[in-house]
Image 1: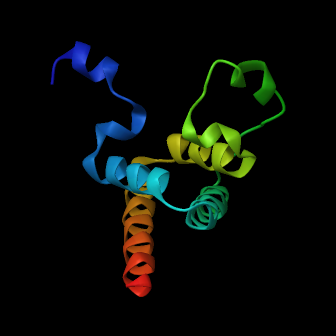
Image 2 (image 1 turned 135 degrees about the vertical axis):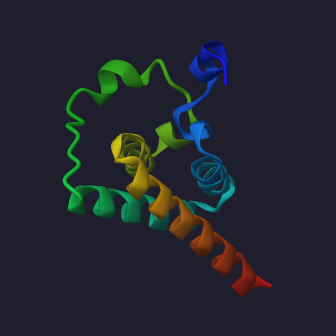
Image 3 (image 1 turned 45 degrees about the horizontal axis):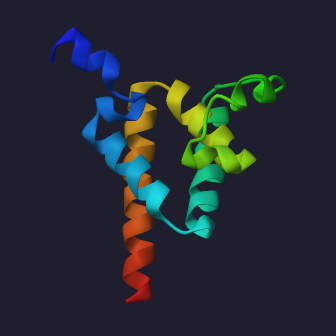
Length: 107
């Protein structure tokens, strides 16, 4: 991959599993999104991640992403971005599995 292509990718597009998890999460119902968001936050904190959200409003106006309208989703995606790759990959697999199983139950 060229350096230019790398720079144009979103952080979650660097790995296909993480990308799939984020895209599935984005397209899911609010209930599923919040369930997964709370799980991401909990797991990230359990692994020592910490983010201060005191200045969120200072930069939030720049973004109009799908997760920015909900504080929990916003925080979850920020935690998801900073956790180590192995944890990110594991959580991605769990999110994919949860969403697929949830949708299968609705059939």
